[in-house]
Image 1 (tube, rainbow, N blue to C red):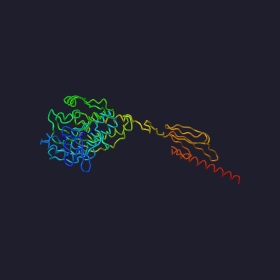
Image 2: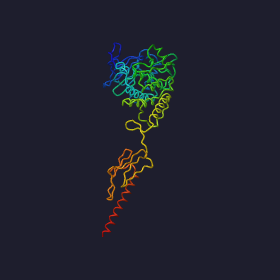
Image 3: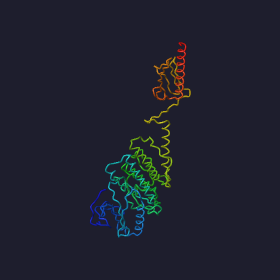
Image 4: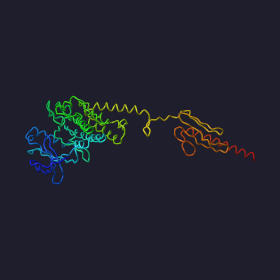
Length: 419
């Protein structure tokens, strides 16, 4: 994150924190890099003087700070301290080292599919915790996502709003950043968790294309495109494009939930990291899924159904270890083979092959050689390998015993005659 020197009008101490650098400025105020007496670094935002004089703003700001305290998990910068009664209200959050997603893409260009999916999975999982705390961010965008060594972090809940609260917008006005606002925000309708899903979809598209899915232009032009035109996703990888398009649906009910996004993006990230082709299905997930009362996301369900249909068509047979499809024929009921001392036989039954070894001998001395092959891929014989057909083995043992007894009886009879 770029840092600037403090200006003459900037304070040097706020609360118990000493300020060192400017981190940036926005519509609500200025963000500073500060530290406490123990050396802990914080990002401290001081509200603008004109907003500080607005009592309605102060009341809303107090609710937002209270809601931010309820957020659990490592997806956001943890709230450290705040003073809502100061002449200029302020709040301090944990300082997150690392560039913003906007700066990284601007400097290095579009990210790969695996990186975009991994970032999206972490952000959607973080939004689950945000929404469970009853908060809607309302201004999720690349500049409000910091890429820390421990993963992406969501910052700047400056215009966040508690779920169920009355909207801050009026018809014809919008609070947020054009190109990342949801259509319901532009119309002045109430925001829901699906509002953040739309912004996340636009953010992922930006990370993959290094451009907004709604192009460039004035605020009015951008807001019109968000409401009336479809997003342009030509640069988004094929593995991500259907899911991103589902996030950017005009109707909030057609967008997937943050939980669905997290699960799907984790699968895509794992597949892309392994370099598997898009058409190959990942390991199937358990049939049971957690209960989620958020929007079901009909577009995502249809996308998943189409994926499963393609998987079923391709997986008609059993898969071998190298991905090739083959079927193993079962041996026919009439597959039998036997040895006699007078001939060698070969028979093909049920797709398998049974043959006696050319050197096998059976004579009066009770010497029997067995070295047959079976078509199921195994080699069968008396040399220690198990035959493919147990019934055939029993028949051979029976024949061997009978022949041995006959030979012994013959020897005994010959000795009796000689006596």
